[in-house]
Length: 245
Image (cartoon, rainbow, N blue to C red; front, side, top):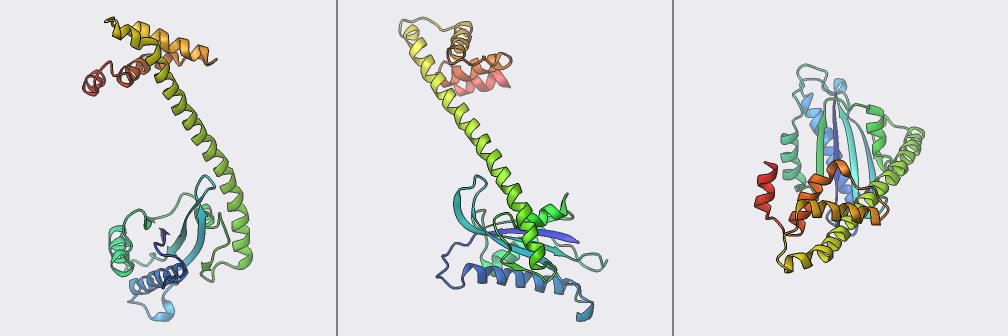
C-alpha cells in the first residue's frame, strides 16, 4: 500500500464554480483514475479500489479561525509487483497541470510507504468534523467514532500549542524589556566614553533577572552577554559571527 495525504486550500469562495467541495471531488476522482491506471494490466473486476477520507477545516492548530481547507487522506494498493511506484514529484506536477495546484498556500502533498500509526493518520482528517466525502470502507458509525477521538486529541493539542506560543511571546517580551533596561542603564557610560565590560554587562543582566524575581540562566549567561552585545550594537554582526565560528 501507499498512503497519500493532501491538504488543499481553495483560493476561491463557495460562490465561484467549481465550488471547493466539487474541486475536492474532482481531485479524488483523479486519484481514483490514477489508481485504476496503475492496475491497467488487470481486468476491471480485479482492480483494487482506493480507500479515502476527506474532511473540511476552518481553524488552525491554535483553535483560531483560518482559511477553509480540506484534508484528503488516501490509501492506494501497490502490493502487485507490476504496480508502478507513486512518486511525489510526478503527482505534484500532475496536480499542477490538471488543477492548478502550486505553492504552500494552495496545497501540501505527502507520500508515505506506511505512517507510524495508521489509525491515527486516518483520524487526523476527522479532528474538526465528520468527513464530508469518503469511500465505502468507512461507515457513518466509524466516522463518528473517529471524529469523537480525533476531536479530543485536537482540543488537547490546541491547549498545548497555545501554552507553547504564550511562553514564546513571554520570552520575547522579556528579552525586549531586558534590552530596553540595558540601554537605559549602560548607554550613559558609553556617552561618557567609558567601555562596558563583559563583566558589567553580565552583572547588569543578572540583576535585571533578579529584579523580575526570576533566576538568571547561569548556564547560558555567557551566550546571552554576546547576544545582548549585538542587540545593544556593542559589536557588529560580523564580529558576532567571528566569535561563534
